[in-house]
Amino acid sequence: MASKKYIKNYDLVETEDGKGRVKKTAVYHGDYFSLNIEESQIKQFKWQFILLFVVSLALHVSAGLVNNPGLNQLYTALPYTGSFFPLIFLAAGILRIPYKKRPYRVEEVDLSYHRVVNTSRLYLIIMGIGILGILIYMIFVSNVQTLGREVVYISLVLGAAFLVWIILQKATKITIKMEETPINSE
Image 1 (cartoon, rainbow, N blue to C red):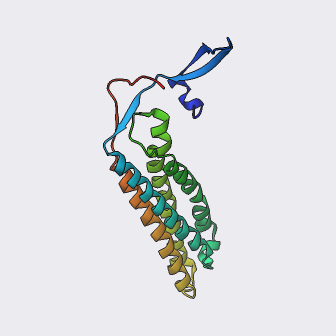
Image 2: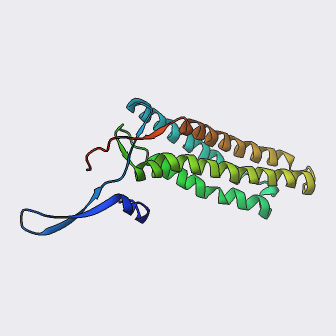
Image 3: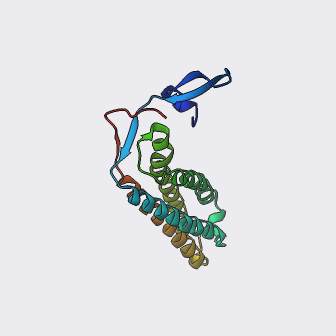
């Protein structure tokens, strides 16, 4: 079981083993889900997601290494650092995407495909706020002296956000349907 959130989808069944000991096992009785893509496409999507994520993480970290004064402001630094949380959960969601096509349990769908979509959206929202903050800094506070470094920072962050947007677009094309007939539990 993944967490207490999904406990309603499981029953605790007591069985006896060969030595007469009582053993408790969790048996899934919830809904099963299927995808509209083939197994080869699942593997291809997962590897594309991994590649896009690694490059976007590298761009995001590189943006933080630019010595731009705009990032010293609270209204720009908070969105930049806060966006690492959606990136961590995006990585967790991508790594949890299964390789094989089969009926998926509700927590498998929630902790992989739905997590990828939700954390991608959250990252884009937070970075949009950060870019807006850096633009406000450049317009109202900056003396145009550091324009080059600010442009490098913005371009790196926009590159990372664009790659996460590609992940979001690919993930939303995957349709997850509830199966009509339940499969035997594992």
